[in-house]
Length: 149
Picture 1 (cartoon, one colour):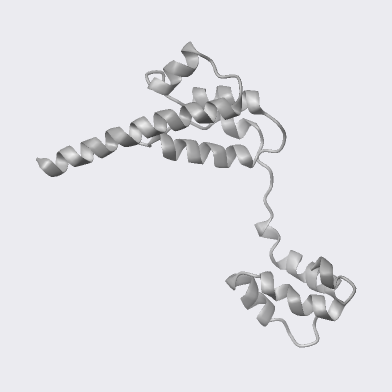
Picture 2 (picture 1 turned 45 degrees about the vertical axis):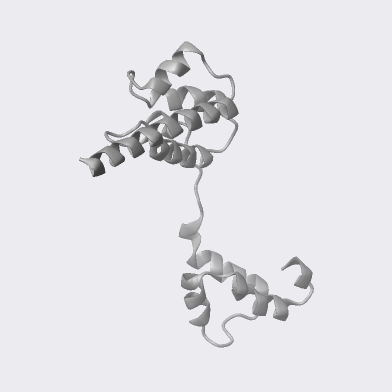
């Protein structure tokens, strides 16, 4: 769009090329001559799709995160990092402690993190990956043994 910034008519024509199916239906449903400038087009778009704006989550959202009954470490960590990424600011130290707190006391990863604390989010992610692979291997062995029986 920056390339066409001097030509409003062209910007209005190029605008729909970046829209998904829902926004494209909205765009195609606009009345003829309803939009007379790119600024008006972006305002109308913003007014219609304001609900798509993401509001940053508060830091306390991480405190309520915990692994669910029967949930795999992979599913929990995916859910956790998705939530973590919705929080504004740098809270790496909080990420380490809240991820660990979300695991049950008897979980092997929690025991390891308690015994040898990690000092960075990168290190935490490495530990999670290690334990996730172990968990996935155990699940594969269980599935194989069920097929044999």
